[in-house]
Structure formats: C-alpha cells, structure tokens
Length: 442
Ligand SMILES: [Mn+2]
Image (cartoon, rainbow, N blue to C red):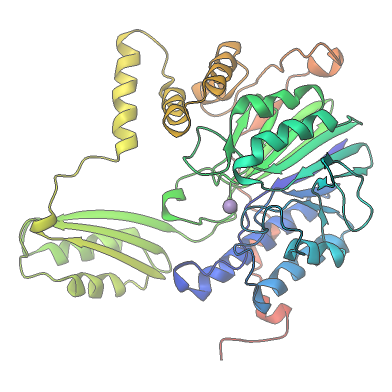
C-alpha cells in the first residue's frame, strides 16, 4: 500500500491586502497540511508548484516559514517532491531558484526535465533530475512552462518509463475550469494514461478530478476573493488494490465574505448594523458592495465606521452612488447556469449545466476542438467529472478499461469529495514566532 498527500499552490509569502495576519495564514495552512500528512504517516508528499508566492524577491520570514514546515516532513522521514510553479521560477533561465535552494538543503526533491540539446529525463541524483524512484513508486516532475506547457508535456510523455505506481506531477491547468494562462487541453494530459497511474497537477486554485486519473487539489488558502467558494484542499491518496482518494479541506481558516447592499432610505446604517451583527464578521475578510440611487446623506466613511465596529480583519468597500447606479443582476455565472438548467429541463435532459458551462469556457478561452471532443467523449463514457457532479456527494466511478492490469481495474475506486480536516493541528495554533524564537509584534 502506497500512501501520499498531493497538495499545490501554497503561496507562502503572500502578504494579501498588505496584511501580516494573512501572510501568517498562508504559512499556518501549510503547517496544518504538513501535520496532516505526518499524522497519516504517508510515504511521500507532492507539492505541485507555487510553494512560494513571489518568484524572485524572497524575504527572511517566508524562507523561515518554508524551512520550518519542510523540516517537519524531514524529521518524520517523509520525502517532499516538488515542482516549480509560475510563482516559483523563471522558465528557461538556468538561474538557481529558491526551490533549488530548498533542494540543495535537502528539504525537497525539486524535479524538472533538463534541456541539453533536447528534453531529457534524468534520475534524481541528489541535486537535480526529472524523476525519482521511491519504494514501489516512480515520480516524474515537470515545472511550469507557460504557453509551451502543452508542447513540452507531449515530448515529456514519450520519454516516461513506467515503473510500479507511476506519478506525473506538473504545474499546469486543464482548460475550462478557470480562464487563466498556462492551461492545456484535457486530451494532452489524458494521453499519459498508458504510462502513468496518477497525474498530480497544480496551478488552478480550484479542486477537480478527471476520470480518477487527473487530480488538482486547488490552493490551500484563498488567494483571491473570487476563490472563496471553491472546493480546495489536499488529496490524501492510497494505492493498493486500486486507487482511493479523498479531498481534505478546511486548511484555510480565515472567513471571507462578499456582501452587497442597496441603500433605499436613511435607516440603512441601522439595517447594516443589524445584518453585520448576525453575520459575525470579526477577524474576517469582508468585501462590501454598496449601491445607492440617492446619497441619503450616507457617506462611504459612515459605512466603514459601522463595519469596523465589528472588527473585521480587512474591509474592502465599493460604494456606488446614483451616477454609477446600475440595476444588479445575480452573478453572471449563476444566472447563466440557471438559464442552461431550464433549457436542459425543457428538453428532458439531466442537469449537466456545470459541464455545459465548462464547455463554454473552453470555447471562449481557446477554441480548441480537440479538447472539446475529448471532453464530450469523457462525458459520454461516463468516467468523468460529469458523473461525479450529477450524483452529488459520493459516487463510485468504474475505472475505464485500459486493457492491462484487469484485476486492478476491476476494483471500484472510492472517493469522498469533501471531508474537512479536523486533526490535531486544528487545535494547536502554530505560533511561528515562537518556532523561530523571534517576536516581530513588538
Ligand atoms: Mn498558484
């Protein structure tokens, strides 16, 4: 039995909103995730890129946070296998990255291919390499290559040699989940199926699984308010008789709220006061959008004063008065989804509005017919996100027949989509200042 944790997008060093508390949140989430891995006594940990938030400017505090947490794994003799993300490295420049620094200090195994004349996959020699053999498992790694990702990945795949349970980890997104740079068509990654058992991705800060084969855990913390409702966490994976996995969430403890109000009369501040009291926004990150047809004598400062009485960590206020007033519509996505749902219903289809929306995203971001075909095929075969989403919570997905290893393939895989982590580390708050014998609060 092989057990491992797959995480990605830690973004250490992100002083979100310029807040030191948020900087610490990111380290705390990493610390909690690491302790979870140790608690589970996993064989190895994969970090699929973006351990750090900034690729070049490193500050002593961030480096200390990274080092201290990675030392927990080292002490427990759990190897940490990592690849560089867009935030960790420059693409082709052979400069020594901070990830190389961590590797040099025996804290991580930083996997990447080398380019002499052409792409080469060498075994990890203690300082560099593209793959490493651990007991019963072989792990290949590829760092972020921006727009070249798809091309390099196809070359990479040809050179992979399967041995035991084989993992491929890369910092790359699959098209269609979020409209961001550095994504590739799903088909490229599904081509790895003949050589690889588990694809461990990072980059997209939202969790997804495709065909019990391609895995993306999402970021540990919330890097942007738009991510606040995404499923995110780490995958706890067990491989014995088939593949079992769980997405463990709950590493981000900070509450994020996005509120919007329309001022209709002079009593608005009372109304706001009441509403915020009920919401308990203390220590939260609060984005507030206010629209008002008339001023009613209420200024942005008045609103801020009321909000600050409840001691949120961060307040972001957007106050629009009549000049900018536009009638509000519910979030564009949810409105779109509703329309699609109604359409599907009227044609007596099942509700696969999420998949339709994803298709639409693929079209609008790249118009790649291959990935569209591939996606439709995966839905029709039923071994994909489609089935998982349609069933809701827990579903069992039959592994697709690959022609080999029939005994293994017949096993049904089990997965639970969200199971919040409530381990030991949850109670014991990590005071990194104590950990490094230094108090910056004074
Ligand atoms: Mn990231």
